[in-house]
Length: 444
Image (tube, rainbow, N blue to C red; front, side):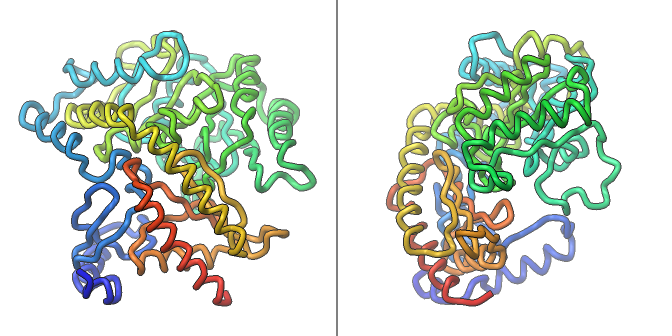
């Protein structure tokens, strides 16, 4: 292994697989670097050439319990021997019911709740959009600049992350108004970070409701508790609470997107808990089943019960194997992984802020739990984005055995499995710092 680590990545096997991929896989998918995964365990991954990597991506915040956790693997294998599929929208089976009971039991708020299972985050958002319209009989939605809610046509209409994601797909759903998201690091011109929240809420009341859409025709406001693809932006502490109050005052449902921030990643089961907010509808996916395709919406019963039989359904949502993987994942989260996310997340942010003192490209360090980000800038005063530098750091880390990904315009995100150890965190941050130092010496 030591000899292989000295060779250039990717190796010949990976190059061959990448060539075969290009011949048959859509070019619409994006790959930051030519990693061809062969196996993984915990936070470690090995590619087809035997190169080892420390994974700070978790398959985009999916493998919450680490790669191939033995308890999750056992749950999957045991269920696969008994029942692989029986559509939960037409039949009953225990694992789907048990999982729904667990989600309802610890979802925010004391009111009764119900669950609808999906296959992905985008599908969860689509279901939430339909439920909000069905329950309110209102046609419009409010979302936020920088938001990412998925790539299906409805979810894409709410998304406002990157223009390329919408290119050539018009017309989308036209009844969506995007409000400014309160970004403390990049507040609107002339404002300080503390004024972001009032600016956003005033914009909704004074601009959106007066010029774009009547408040009484808005079904729901969709918001990420922490913006994901938009840059891992943690809003001011009072934003979600005040937004919930504004929505309630107009009879608008609050839909909190916890697809990336939920299931223990921030040190609590759901990021909205940090802000003392109870969503009317919550969307889930990614980390819920440690890699099995599963999503869900959790809604107050009085809202979910508005749906009549046949109003919404799917074939694969709540698959028995995925549900058993989710039940095993939840036990692991409650048995220590959530606490570990909080402890290791605090450690990583502390170390990154120490690095920030000596690395000129590090403009901002932010996050909650193991949802951590560093925003790179060319100049800390002007905050000019450092896109080329960010991309160079990602590539450089890959070449040294660390897997990270970007988001926003020039943000690096660290989203390792929640099984991360302090030793692994130090190792990964050490590689990151070494690569960052190399990039800072270059001119772009």
